[in-house]
Length: 137
Image (cartoon, rainbow, N blue to C red):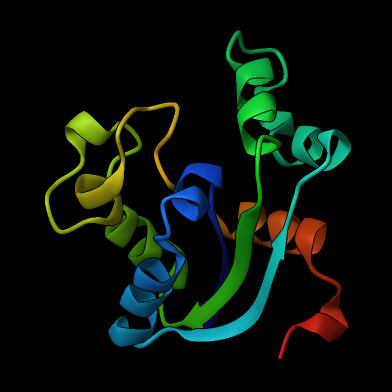
């Protein structure tokens, strides 16, 4: 079993897509092991996007992710990281296939509805940023 971190971003929460997104993952067979809604502070946002700190779009990422509530969750299942990323679709909505979350719901690269861990290392780091071990079932 593998765990991955997923976040419905402020645009997805604002548009009422949380239930649809969670439902897709549950129907696929992933088990929800942690869930919380929160408003991310600047410090957590900067830690979450730390690998992009030196990139020109870093400040925009931080501003967007702190602009409204998000829903953070942890999914568990076989090959969860790769399968969740496949279900999410390409980062840029113009490249995301219909049937993927971004292909169906994302409007721009800046507001692309969802984040998911890219690797086992990222998943472990992101899960630890957003959840204490005792919060995961």
